[in-house]
Figure (cartoon, rainbow, N blue to C red):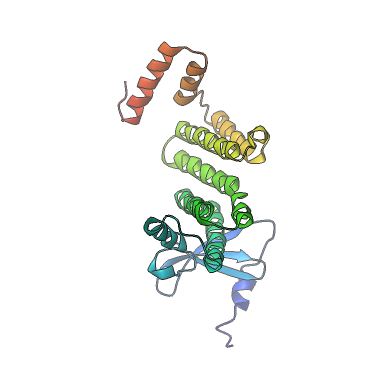
Length: 247
């Protein structure tokens, strides 16, 4: 191996720090932007679009795209051992890139990668024959969903308003609650660390930006208190806002 081929200089100039995630965007030899992530014994390089390793499985953008196409043609297909192996590879790749996007504060891309992973989990659940293998992935669904909710809220904070970010967090918390209920674990939801971290983020945004109760929160309270006239007014106002009309 020549001196040009080893990573000595790169690793010396970019030391590993175990207490932090070190990520950067660099330009490839052909001018494209790629992500680099410093890991314990080297550097991971990930593509910014499609599959992180740049591969096109069966000429599809990702293995998930390939499996979705397969499911459309044959809804009853069962994943083979080799297909399960390829799914696992893609899970790991998208996990690394999702962490990179969050570190780089590229929240829209983090949302997209989290949604890809959640869709891949759905494919595993619907077409996996080995229940233990399926559950090995399902146990991470709340964590992936947490990243998706967090990234979506922070994207709303940057691109819209604090109120929109808080509304996104509230929607995400309900989504997360549904996952817990699906697995008969709803009694654990209130004290779950992921839920608590999302609530902490919501309340910190509320305090920092001096945001009161959002329109959606006021509507939920009115319905819960059976104040139906007020609920109807709030529902109309919410519909006007969503259509871009202000009064």
